Length: 228
Image (tube, rainbow, N blue to C red; front, side):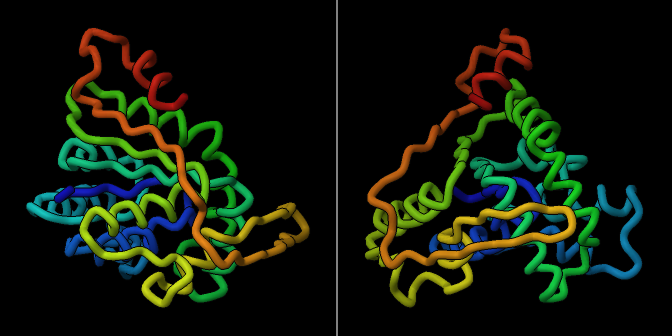
């Protein structure tokens, strides 16, 4: 894994995951939010396309950020795509906390993007990842347990013991992916958090090498296979 694209809905933990995996693998970590939302003024569409092309031109990187308008070139450049498809309510909760800590993305827009992701973002992402021109491994995680176990597996394969409850896992990561959220967004967003002391015993995740798919299949059929 030399070029990893980390994608998913707003506030699904992409930046934290990328930082951790980048540390394990020794990869340069790039957060697309730094190059878009933290710029003043915000880049124009043309400037953003050019900047994104520059960012993905390197030989080794892990890039966090969805930005579906420019995602396809990133998928083509990547050898691995990690899709953090975490529950909507958890993302709503974490984007609210993220804004309270000063993230520049508009909160109401972020809520709207998260809410629409289940009906639009997942479909668009699945279709993009089903492209016959891609040749990358795809990991789709739907739960905190999947994410935590994957990081443990990577560290284990590199010979570094993984202790999810220990200090080697950043507190922010441990909290974000161990917090079950029960909330309602409207007049209020309520969250109940419970932190667990141990890592899940195992995980189930589907890995697909897109390049091995039948290139004659219709994109919608491939998308259905990825999104299942």
